[in-house]
Image: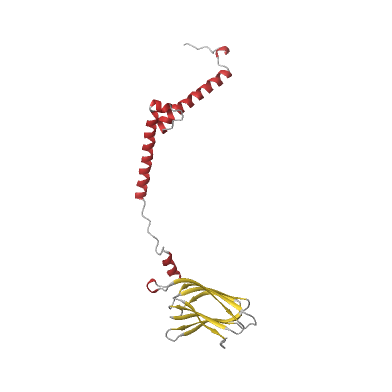
Length: 221
């Protein structure tokens, strides 16, 4: 049996030689990557060598094939995905109709309004909305410069009457009014203070119109 002899210390490469070999190998690998691999696989040719060797065109074809394959796969997934059914009542108008509890077939116009009126001491005013039974309207009113007495009430087209809420020396109010029947629904305010008061009323909801019915020095409230 032949036993190989251990190399003499002088035959082994020095550390300097190993570092030099490693650097040369790294430079060679980088050169191969830039001049051959990138042009032939990805169509990237920073040095121009790939074009000269005909490798860049091959890489561009490969890249194009890969992009087309990815696009086809994406299209297939989209075709296989179940169609999403539209949400019932997704339109803004439909959601608003549902929110205000008004049937679409007989719904009044959904609108927003802001009105203001200044009352001198002892004066009164009345503002009404024309609403169908079951319609709803959000409201907010403030008495700037003082307080007022009020009566939120309604008068029906068939002679019905109702008082929703009353108050005395109140600086404002807010909430939602739901029409008890077809007719005029709204507020009567009187300024019992000794100075001018400006009423500001904001409304939004399902009503046909909103108007100031009267103003003056009536004895009510």
